[in-house]
Image 1 (cartoon, rainbow, N blue to C red):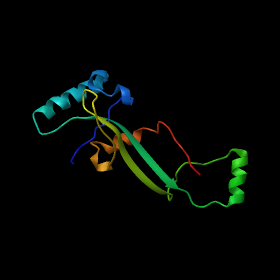
Image 2: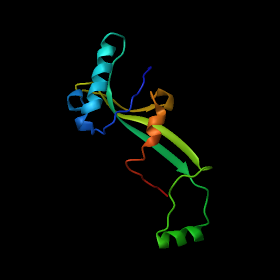
Image 3: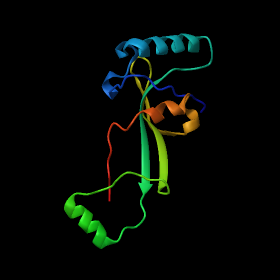
Image 4: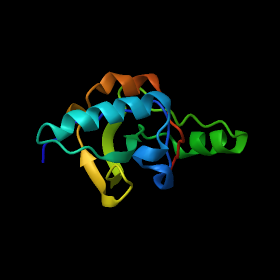
Amino acid sequence: MNFLCHYLEHQYTETSLSLSRLVRGDLQVVTRVAHAAEQTDFIVYLVTFERRRVGCHDEIDSEVESEFESRGDHDHELHEGDEILDEWVLEKVVTLDGTYVAEDILIGRDDLVDPKALDEYGPDKEEYSG
């Protein structure tokens, strides 16, 4: 399966994912791409997208770790040298009218039209598991 993913400006929930519910610039972009796709062998889908960064910190002495925990002094950020796995997931895929197509599709960074665009945005949410 060959595809390209383009990141829209606004965030959409799974229930608001359809052409009729897109706003401003997103609506214009998707409408133009959909029109061009009609002239070629492309199909346009809308998706919710998640980037998962999973890291493994160096081992910390348990005595030191418990001291940090008691003070509420955690450093959960990933640092240079930490082992990091980057996963890019299309969580929900729908047609332009909102009809369900697929979910949980792993993609690569090369599948994004402009992968650097996502580097500007911080995470919407962060989770930490010790």
